[in-house]
Length: 314
Image (cartoon, rainbow, N blue to C red; front, top):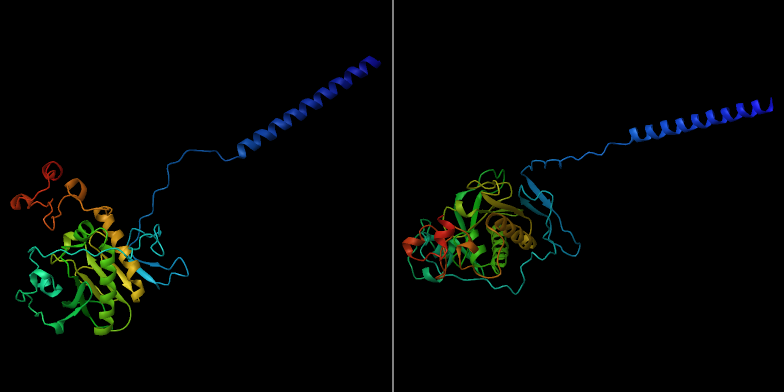
């Protein structure tokens, strides 16, 4: 009888243990099934960027540059910063100077006061008198013969500012004056804005430049107009041109940095020295100051860079 009871107790303990083990196994299975399944997915596609006005404010309180607005549909995440950054042009940067070489811009050459055209007769329909121009240190501002549209209650008079040195366009400036380009642009922004305030009216001003392939006159020129205005298709997409809104003269430096970054996006990062081959400067750009060219007409002028045929005419 005692042995029988011991056997029954052993069987009972065994059954209880088995039941507990089964419950633990079921609980573990339920926990595993409840855990999220790890799968490998491709990254989510980037959202389409919407063109608009990017409001970029100073990043450091000690850098008082006001509120700068840049019309740009690429950097909407503010992935780069100009406030207090290394993108500012050093104060020691020298502004380059090139003589006009006859690129169908005689009127602008005279208005810009380039050395080559000072003794030449005026080729501008509106004249070239000093009453029509405002001279600055390295640039000149004059009234555009075209008027801006969309200015609401503001004056629709538009201004043009050109450097005294010859540069056909923004790409020409970036390529042939890599160290002084940003400093020159900052002066042009500052001088044009001050002239706009004196001649046209108070308030913010829109500053615009065309991309190299869309310039109407082959002399670098900056459009200055009312803050909401449009002129010659600007503002438009980044491939057409660059525009920024200027609220004070302190905005000149950050806007110049923005304009140079835009130019680098289109035509490559500035080098530390002047290029001497098409592989360095790219195709479709003329030489300057006796330097070789990578433009299609270089064969006519016999000034092609040595690698023009292999790089630009495969």
